[in-house]
Length: 438
Figure (cartoon, one colour):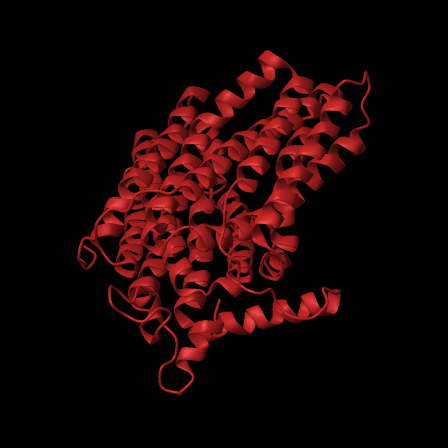
């Protein structure tokens, strides 16, 4: 079990904390509406499964390309204004979808364009949100806020598809898109109402393409100087590879290999969502009691252990149990990693670090999905799939337990961003590295 630490008094949330949470919730609900409304509209127009799937999958593309550089924007400009601009841009695009949906024959290209532009907004929002969270939430409350956002995100992933498609079916696409626009507007108002202390001075120099490229390069150099964060970024990407090797093939595995009805697939996915909610609830209690590095290693190990059960007993109920516990482990890992990263990464570069980490994690999703598809096409697909995923996750666990990641949390009384967080301490520049590193 992770190493225990002194239990601190539970701090109470302030007005900025509450408004930021409310904005996250409202915006998250709006995200699920547009994720489902646009594919439904495309299906109505084309009747094509391929066109509909493309409308749903298009949202992942910007995270891999645009997401790499979006963090530079979050670090160069006022993060609250970036978030407000993102919400207002999303509201305008949702209104455009509303107008298109009222046409008898809306142009498909325009719908795809709106979907793509909406997807391009979110990579800018996420690093700005992470940096703004650090700016307005006291450090002692970071773990609880991260746990809350992970719980809400998991709950929306659990009920969002059902609630979202019900809303679209009951209200129709035009009204659903209008509700979506209003949700983004409400989120912008909530963020506007958050009072903040003066933010750190933005990076100097004009905002040109060359300057953005230089800031991005500076962020990568900073990331390389802090070993704990760099190791964590690589290990999180590998963990995502292991998870999506399974998750990308669950539909085929349950419906075709196991030949089970769709309700069983729903139970498996629902178990993961429910597990993630449970993990999000447990995470703040564990982060209060244990250090973040060992807790992160424990979560990685638990994730690998869950994949052993279906490898030993390749049945649908073993997959259901394993994927439910995997949801718990995922929430524990996410909360521990986000909190540790927010504690050791300085505010002025956190946007770049978050965007690079997120892009690395998203880049392994298609690789994992392709690998899983190849594995389930061979002999003993369930056992083969989970054995391979368990092996990769075991490597991730060992990498976490025996790398600087396990020491990423300096603990109570230690200097912020000190050498215990994983930066090299023998070259006389450790303190500078800790400040510069992403």
